[in-house]
Amino acid sequence: PVTLRLLRSDSDLVRRFADTFLENPRGGGNNITTVVRMNVERHLGKLGQGLEEAKMAARAEGRKLQDIEIVRALRSGKEVEGPEAIAVNALRQFHADLRKYGLDSGIFNKAFPESATYFHRSWKPSQFNKLIEEFGEEQVTEFIAKAVMNHKNTRASGIDLTKAKKIAKRIIEYGKDPQAARDWKATGAMLNRMRTEITEELTADARRLGQEVSEDAIKRDVDDFIEAVIPSIDNQPHLSYGRRRIDMDETFSMSMGGRVVHIDELMNNNILPNVTRYAHKVIGGSEVRKGMKAVFGNADTDLMTAKKAIRESQSGMDEGKFAEDMFDHAYKSLTGQPIYNSPRFLKWAMGYPCYYWCCSF
Image 1: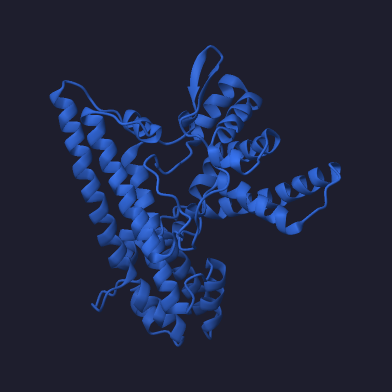
Image 2 (image 1 turned 120 degrees about the horizontal axis):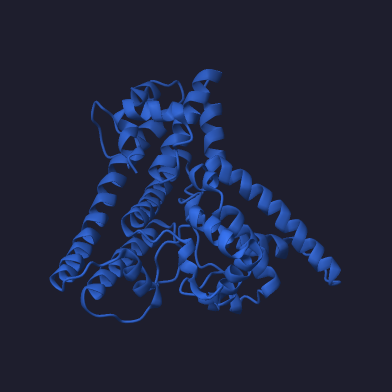
């Protein structure tokens, strides 16, 4: 099995990784895989009870409670009654519990806001293409830009409509690409290209306006733009982060083409898949952060640095690549990252219990 092979490594670093992160078929102490599995199941179980109670109450009234109704009630921040209130309160408690989990572990810093309206944003590629086909890309870009401008954080940051349209353009680019949503390698390549393009655009804008070009200020703006497109928790969940400077009003709607279009039409509003991924990222990111501290001595060790250290700690090239691949796959699966782009890993995952549970999400 993979774990035993890694535990026999001639590298102390690789052995620490295997002992800390992976389940051992021969037994042993706590490991991150076990802790993440148990805590994800515990938090989802508690939420599931509340949602089932809400659905039973709705059935008693002779109706079916739809996920979109619950999510819109949650995001509105308004007080609701009846079955909707049961569901909304269960979701609020779930997110409050995960916020505390993240704060305690350090992946959320003190600036991370407590919000009674939070529901993790997940784009739905098929809907981007449908809206663009219905209204055209220019009008959809304007629509998203207005949703960005309608959030108080964005207005307070001084972002104007021109910059909001730049953000909207990137959201569309990411949102309508199903490969980027499934494959982190594709997402990483897209983010690197976006970062370069946005840096060049903001630099050109500053020079055109006769402003001094501040590399630090532009980097902050670029980081904010990228965070608005793809939140940090969706790529390296173990790293600490807080309040977004640029955000989006997720209740925004406007009349387009003779009908009212809601911004959440572009989002995945199915509750169970969404909260499962979010719990996996927060809990997995929290526990992996502890693992980074235990293995590398620094909780803020980024993924690329960690992989390089694992690879270079081995004496042989083949063993080094194998250990690096196993670390990469363990990180992604434990923190809810896509791993389906790797057929080789899926074959391993189905055969080795230390990875099987991680892949089931």
